[in-house]
Length: 182
Image (cartoon, rainbow, N blue to C red; front, side):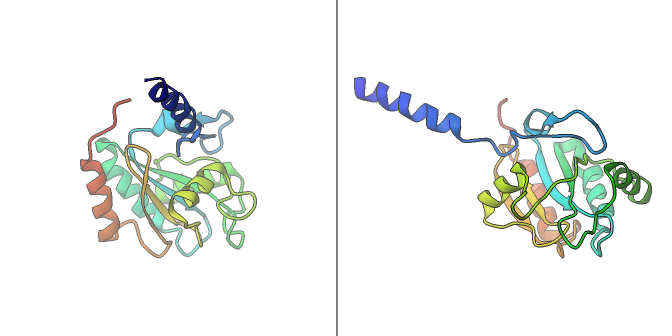
């Protein structure tokens, strides 16, 4: 009995020390106050995307917004993270990026502060995404699908569009999974 109690005491701190994928804070684009992603987006199916305003894949904003409109009411959200990591394709200020996304593509899905998604300055979320998949973005518009319980269940390179049947099927599969108890 003492051994079992000791085992529980030892096991609990190890589990508690493991950070949750979404237990990180980022500012919504062009704002001053950071929010905790788990508190704001936890329990949803998420498509996390590193974006850029001056890239050949930039028109994917339209498809990403279409996914948001199509599945948002079912507990889905796209999360956009602008990044200037690939050939300086998002050099503007956060305010400029926000205006571009809104005025050019009608983006209403959550966009967060400009971040590094690769290299030594990689932000915490993208380090965790890499740790979960073994894959870092190779370019702008890399997509990671996160289940309602915070597991990374898929990732797609930039060339895979938001309308891709495999990506859409994966989103629909995750939306059918029960929401975790919070």
